[in-house]
Length: 311
Image 1 (cartoon, rainbow, N blue to C red):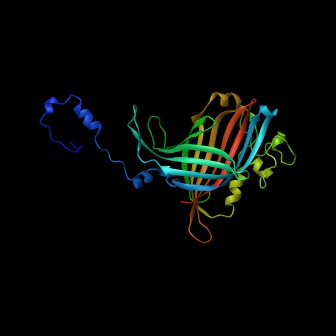
Image 2: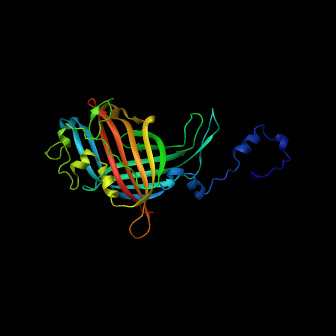
Image 3: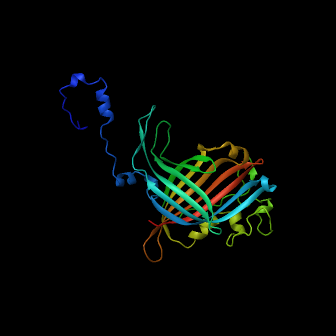
């Protein structure tokens, strides 16, 4: 019997009592076509495709084995970030309000060192577009669900806004600070010698890759602002996400005890760029700060990139 058949079979009296439930459970439900799914992505609609480009990574990692508090790793990076639309709506069932339906994309991020060509980062994950809800009372939101091979998984949530022009990109902090204290403001002196490029230091990437400057150490976001200084950007979709106040990071016990990743904060700018000649193209810039807690301090691990959509 096809799911659409409504005739009663001759042996209906012999069917089990739950036959109707079984038939309903196997009834055909059409999945929306790709265009419909893509249209439901909202602020994530321009993500599907391949993005590639370059960036900068800076991390102060513990160096107990090297007999120092930290080793400051500095990398010029090469990155590929591929997004694909999830092929079906995602129903979330409600107990205090009606069900909601999520739509999203899954992605794979790979980052390598431009100088050594060694692998630096691998991250599979998902972005989801979440509608307005009443329980809890929240406006439309977005979330990124990320995992990395060090043994960490993060739920990073936030909101999206549209800007009719270029983005506003502020500076980002790289100065370590006491766990639980406010993030240092712009221009705060950094007393750790590893961060001072004017003096040689054995506990820092050596030689410092050509192109890395003290300005990048003090504020990695200059890599982003310098890149767009002479571009004409006609539209920007801003994705602002954080593990606080909603979300969080889970780590394996070794990470918790040695370099506890406690928070992630990131901003992604999806930009429409109009060149002096030729067609417009899509550009993705982002800045991300992960706080690693060890030795009584929070150490900002900052990654930035400028990526162009290639298909």
